[in-house]
Each structure stands twice: as C-alpha cells, then as structure tokens.
Image (cartoon, rainbow, N blue to C red; front, side, top):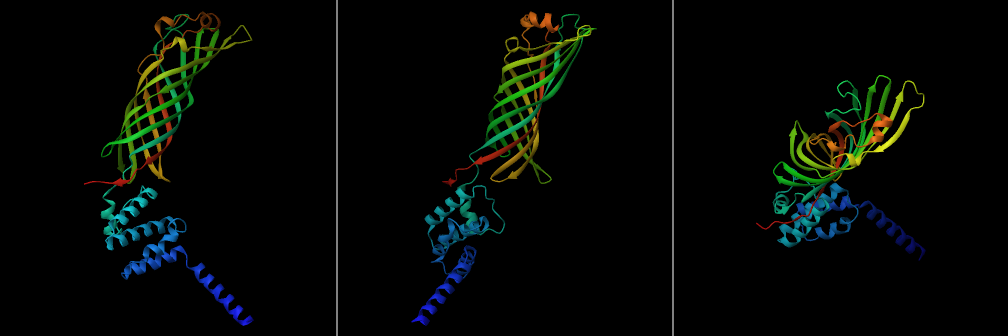
Amino acid sequence: MKKGLLFISIFILYLSGVYAQNTCGDQLKIAQRRFDDGLLEDIPQLLAGCMKNGFTDEEKTNAYKLLIQTYLYNEQPEKADEVMLAFLKEFPNYVIAQNDPKEFINLHKTYRTEPIFKIEVRLSGLLNMARIVEPNSTGNSSTVKTNYKPLVGVGTELNYINRLSNDFDYSIGISFAFARYSYTSVPLAFTKVTGTYTDMYFGLPLSLRYNFKYKRVNLFAKAGIEPVYLISSKVQLERKDEAIDQPYNGTVDLTNLHRRFDVRPILAFGPTVKFGKGNLRLTVEIKFGFIGQLIDNNKYKNLQLQEKFMFVEDNLKFNQLNLSLAYIRPIYNPKKINF
C-alpha cells in the first residue's frame, strides 16, 4: 500500500514537472510544428490557454498569425476575421514584415489599419520677443533709451490631428501661454525704470502639417495660424532715482489698456520618434505677432504710471519662439473594408 502511494506521488510530481516545463512558448512551438505537418484541428485549443496571459508580445503576435492561417486553411473565414479583428485591436500599429505569411498579409489588407485620428499633447518653453511699433514716453521718445528682453515662459497645447491626404495632416487645437519679458528705460538722466511683464494667452491653433523622411529620420514641417485672446497682462515696475535711496515699486494691471485679440502666423519644424504606443516629437516653432498690443487712445490714460513710474507703454508686437516636446497618440478603430 505504501509503495503504491509512493509511486502515485512520484508520478504526480513527474507530471507536474513536465507541465511546468511546457510553457506557452513551448505550446506555440508545438502548434507551429502541427501546422507544418498539416495537423490543424487542435491548434486553436493548444493556443487558447495562453492567449489571455502567458505569451510575450512577440509570441502572441505569432500565435495570432498562426490562428489566422489555420482558420483560412480550414475554410473558416469568419473565424479568421474574428481573430484578425482581435489582433488589430491589441496590436493596432503593427507594421507588415517581409516574412509575414501571404495569407495573413492578404487578410490584413482587407481591414482599416490606419488611425482614425491622433491626439497631441505639448509642453513648451517659450520666449516672447517684443519689437517696438511705436515708441512712447513721458519725455522725448526719440531720446529715451528703452530695451526689451525675452524671459523664459511656458506653454501647453492640445491638438486633434487627422490625415488630409498622403503625407499631409491638418490639426485643430487649444493652447495656453504664460509669457514673460523684461523692460528697461531711462526716461531722465537721473532716473531708471525696470519692469517684468507677465502675459497670459489662450489660443486656437489651426495648422497644416507635412510629414517626410530625411536619411531615415522622420521629420515634419508645419504652417498655420493661431487666433489668440489676451487673458491678462501685468507689469511689475521699479523706479530708481539717483537722489532717492528708496525705489518706487508696484504691480500694475494693463489688461484693459491692451487689445485682447491677435492673429499669429505659425511656422514649425522637428523630428518624430517612436515611443511606446505613440510618438514623441521635438518641435522648434515661431509665432509671428500681427497686431500691435496697445489701444492708441489708452496710452496716456493711466496717470499713476506716468507720475509714479515715469512710464508710458510703447506699442509692441510679439514674435514667440517655442521649443516643445509633444506626445502623439494614434486612435484606432479597425474594421473590415467593404470593397
């Protein structure tokens, strides 16, 4: 009796060891050998237990291909279509390889495999570069030394991208920018005024994108236009007089003195690389200011600025230089194409 129990225990342990060694990878090899030998009937059953969990991505891709071939050779096109649809939902960005089975390739061609659209999320560092359209001053504006320098700001953008034709896409988006630049002026020989502007904008960028390759590098170029709305504009000022030790400081809201709307042409360029299920894109972009920011009737309206800070705004236009990193995620909806 004891010998019998010992024999059964050893046999069970042996079977467990054999089963443990028979991994999903082994199952796939067995299924492939049976396919090569023309023994197709039990291939779906051999692979079924590993399709949900057990295969690596490469093994699972090969298992899908093997199942599709099996059903096609067994003259079960409906089941082959079911497996192909499941494959495309799990691996929507799969690219046909040269060594893929002909049957798999032919069936793959009967499905919509291109993304129906793409979503782009961008984060940018930006420089707001002011240029003077009309100088203004409390004194003689032709002799007053005024200087503007860009400071680093930040921006974000969300875009909907869709194919227009072949290598061309169009995009529609929303953007937010927090722009900064510095101001220095010497209105009088004994007085120096410095300031830091902070402007916030909301925009609706509309663009045409061209995708191309150069020496195996995926690149894109973009041209478009962006209507922008000024949310707020403030300047933090400091006035220093040589005869007075204590400077004058203050922050002034200039929003109501400025035009709220501008239209900015856009040019951009950059490389694109594969990353996970999407792409990363590095972009250098410039947006050109089209409309002067200052409302003419308002330039001498704020008496506090003139008396306390000896400050009258120049009319400015802004070119904005952006360096951005974007993640682009394709959205797929594979389906059978009716020819």
